[in-house]
Length: 140
Image 1 (spheres, rainbow, N blue to C red):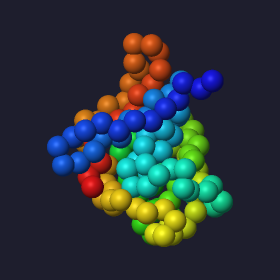
Image 2 (image 1 turned 45 degrees about the vertical axis):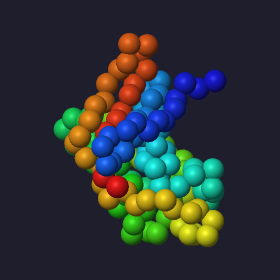
Image 3 (image 1 turned 180 degrees about the horizontal axis):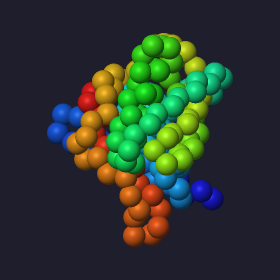
Image 4 (image 1 turned 45 degrees about the horizontal axis):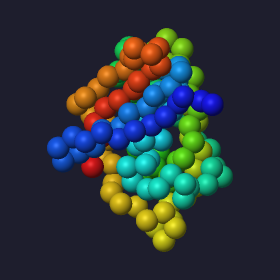
């Protein structure tokens, strides 16, 4: 059984997203799931279309913010929601894919709109159990 997971954590008026995984890539993937789960029930999204996403940054923390903001951009410009993600990171370059479907307000019942990932609470690193965590606060 995979130990990858996502979580939310409270932060004043905004909300934190956290991804945890066996690898840094899994942690980024799970942080993206947490991002989508801020807006809608992940189970309501079918992975019928894919979108490629690329980012580059000199540090993992900055790469996480770029990754999440790229997802937010794709959701806004493609009018889509994503439920599954795949990431590869090589140095400061991230190549990712996001699977989802067009937003249907009657089906997905969006609760809030995420405006962007922030540097608040930004952390990417290993936990004491060896798993990776990738987290930050998103502006809603």
